[in-house]
Length: 186
Image 1 (cartoon, one colour):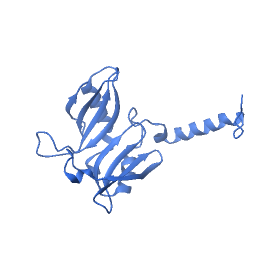
Image 2 (cartoon, rainbow, N blue to C red):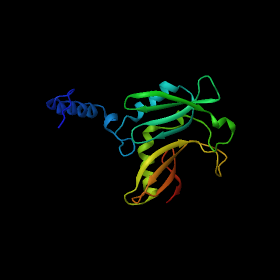
Image 3 (cartoon, helix red, strand yellow):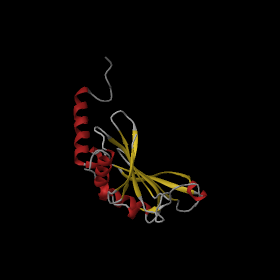
Image 4 (tube, rainbow, N blue to C red):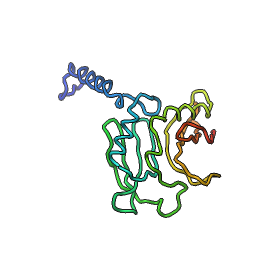
């Protein structure tokens, strides 16, 4: 067996223990944003607002280990800037073409303060209850402001993507307060 010359065998458990202790002392490192409600929701939202200011949000997605969002580019209206928040904080990732300005989207931008990350646990619970399938699991949660539907007033809504135990997918449309509007079953 070839040993790793950079790390003696006796120090490996120490390194693992240090990593585990770090994760336990920082809940965002240990928490799964989808399956857990034990992550710093208010801090995440405040950090994102601190980075993007009053920029308009085009979409926001919560997955298991991060929150990704697209906002107006600071200078070029033909571009959107993408940001990600995770256990290490919020940072810009890349700029992408702003296809929303072409008028081909069925969503429009919204203010980040239209959402309250503290309501995410209620949104998840309402979506799972509406999906009503044993063993169902949320795969991601997306916030947009749809422009389609019967209402003339558009508001930011959560779309909760869920898989049943066989892996079939569906989604539940939920208000920012946790009221179910529509369920699409597999």
